[in-house]
Image 1 (tube, helix red, strand yellow):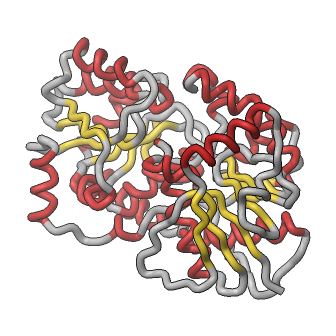
Image 2 (image 1 turned 60 degrees about the horizontal axis):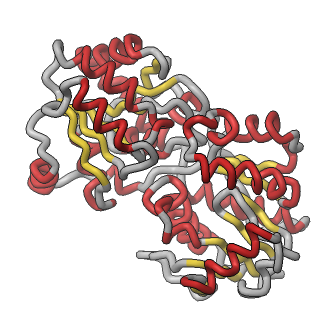
Length: 388
């Protein structure tokens, strides 16, 4: 028996499109369609580009403009009417970004992290109010909850008293293109475009307080006296971005820190592959796709020892306390100065990244759909991800 699944792709039009949520939607949908030719899929909100995937069982249903804003205002203010009215008919919804509108159908919701619970001070006030109001109700109503890591699932259980059986852990993955050999000429051209003229450290993520760039800049300020590398920061402007710029000027790092802003997807693999080391100082991550992108690229990783980072990076990273700028500096200095350590981390990184794939993500997601419907499907076998 086949089913029809509606996937909420509205977020591809918002600023989340270039972050983890956008990557998640853009990679999950093609993987599901490549895996599953039995069920029908409706993409509700925005279309998804699917190069290399030919599927007859998918249709896009735009949901935009004043029409969309009017419906969303009703959902936020009065919790009515059900999303099934403007949306296409289905057996199950998959809401991909924390909150589910009212619906008469079973649904699955994806929770990407619990920053709004664990680090409220790092969330923009209007977003914090929205999540605190609507997420608890969404979790209670959901047929299944997708958590992107064991760390996130544990947080959901602790904060909202949800049964672990209602939560399916579905890790993300890196795009295989990060493992492709890079053209030296193109790499040099990209480096020149962003003003990179020497060896460099790389960090990737939206420029916002949760990413902990303040501590990284303090560590790098002390480190620059001993190394010649630049620090390249890739990411769009986020909440309180101005504070990031002010700190760079205050520490006198304008000549050593490069803020690239948004970088096109096609240029990211070259920037990862060209880095001497990848530094991920975030206070908290629900998953942390950039860690896998760096490891797939063959770049040694130095990262925080909190939340999901050890779960994702395993033994393939050197860790530090994100609140300790001295410890962060020492870890970075150790990687830069020890060629054998870098080589070991690169080898371990390739092995660790291979444990994750979007195919496995699709398998587990489809399993969550069937759990929410209360049915089984012998055609779908979920492969186990080897333990980290």
